[in-house]
Image (cartoon, rainbow, N blue to C red; front, side, top):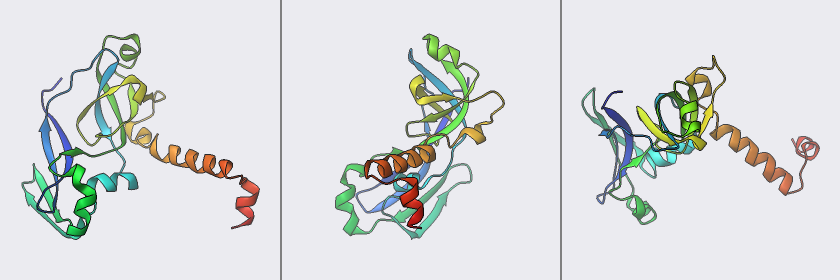
Length: 181
């Protein structure tokens, strides 16, 4: 296993600037019920945009840094800063889900069973090279399924499920929804 790990973070500074940057972080070590996943595919969901860009005016975006360590900055309108006070000067990891190969596993039977397997993961901070997650946040993919094919296994299906459950809770049915179209 390598000792280098990189993640994408979004930071809002006190001077109303959003910064997206790749940061070197520690290589994770799995706990008993955890696995380390080499992240190989991560979708870009609309829900990722909120963390990534927040309330920044992306028409002001500028790129700096290097090819290896690019940095994107953009202005955040002052009127939005009070709502963002909990994010000021905090590097916020980006990414809600993804998939990859388990390269290290904790000592539990469940963690060991995922060793070498391709899994989909949910839980935030997935836009990184190596991600340590609890086995309960993993979905083992059927043999032959690629990380790319499994990367969107959570957000969109859970959104669809929430829509159906909301529809049912409000007393709608497929028939009533279809007739209103």
